[in-house]
Each structure stands twice: as C-alpha cells, then as structure tokens.
Amino acid sequence: MGTLTIVLPDELEERLRRVVAERYGGRRGALSKLIEEALRHYLDLLEHGSEQVFYAVREGEVVASSHSLDELAAKLRELGVDPRSIRIVSSRRVKPIARMGLRGRRA
Amino acid sequence: MSLLGLTPVVWIRVRNPLLGRAYPGEGEAMAVIDTGYEGFLALPRDAFESLGLGELRLEERLLLLPGGRAVKARGVYVSVDVGGATVYGFAETFEGLDELILGQEFLANFKLVVDYCSASVTLIPCKPRHHGL
Image 1 (cartoon, each protein chain N blue to C red):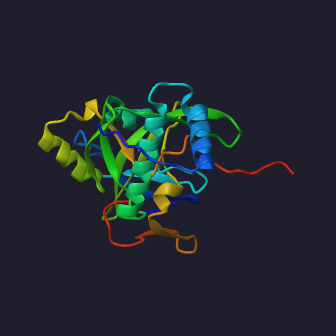
Image 2 (cartoon, rainbow over the protein chains, first blue to last red; image 1 turned 180 degrees about the vertical axis):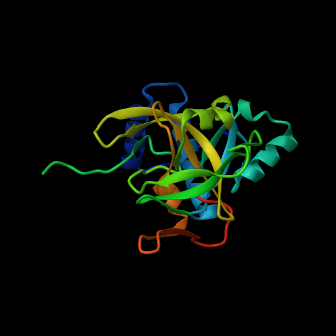
C-alpha cells in the first residue's frame, strides 16, 4: 500500500471529514477507505466513461476486473480464485433502498 | 415475448457465470416486466438458490413495496440472456416473492415495445453489446 501526501482546500477537507464521520463514525482507516472508494469511482469514469465494470474484491484488494461477468468468471478460474471467497462489486453501485411497485400517493 | 392476459412478459435464462449455473436448468423462464420496480431482476428464493447465488457473498438492501412496507432483499450480480442479447445486473430475492420480475435497470438496456393491438412485446437492445447495467 502506498502513502500519499495531498493538499486540499479547507472547505473540501471539512466536507470530506464530515462525510467520513457520518458514514463510518470514528473507525480506524475510514478516511483512507472513503478516498479509495472515491478514487476508484472517478478513475472508472475517466477510463471507461459510463460503461459498467465488475470487480472481484478479496479482503479489500481487487483481484480481477472486467466489463463482463462471464469474462470476470474466466479470469477468476485462471487465477484459481474460489468465487465464494470474493465479493463482486460494480462501478454502478447498488442503491441501498429501491422501490418495487407503483408510487401513487393519496390526494 | 408476449402478453399474459394484459401483463407483459418475456422469456429469459438467468446465469451465474461465477459458478457455471443457470435457471432454469433447460430452456427459459417467464419473467414479468414491471416498470415500477427500480431494480434489475427479482427472483424467488428457489430460483436464487438453484443458481447457487446464496453461496456467494451477498449485498443487502431495502425494497419499498407499494403499500409502504419495506422488506430486506439479498442479492448479487448475474447474467440474463434474452432473445440473443446478454445483459448483466443485480439480482435479488426476498421472502414471499413467487415470480421473476424484470425492472427499470434491466429495461434501460432495451427499447421496449408493448403492443396491445397485436398482443406482442418486443425488446430491442439499445446497441450491440454484451454488458449492461
């Protein structure tokens, strides 16, 4: 793992720390975790535009990635990685809450 | 692809490429098109388990049902083959579900034509590709 020293405007740093506190509380490594997630997401956008990318993640490390689940499965087989040991994530995140059905409201 | 009564349905094959399993074992299964469902694919517990999806590391989320009730759903990414096209998306299951439901994230990959005059449903891929939402 690399260690980077970066410079941020005060307002952005405050916003970053506030979001980290709200999302992860005071957990150790929370700031690095959020920056890692944000960078992955932004770099995916720069590299692949709006195309979807799937990642196989084991203990926080990406072991393989692909635009296609079939290709990702083939890569995992080549690497000898048990699919049960990894988590599949997508560059398009799953919404934590989704609606199922009509959204009518009483007048 | 057709109408079941007045309900638009399509015939699909769901695959779990990670474990090399498919549902149904042979042929295709009927799935209901539900434009009010924001997700990709919801499927009954037995289909979910026969795909081996329960063996994988799952994500959980809440689904808000029309009556306002929220249910906890578990899911993981799958492949869906439909009419020669393949799209990928998040498949989920929850207690009480007894049919396959295709939602907005699935439909976002297609032009959908529901023609009640001729009782037909047509799905046309947005562009040639083998990956989706």
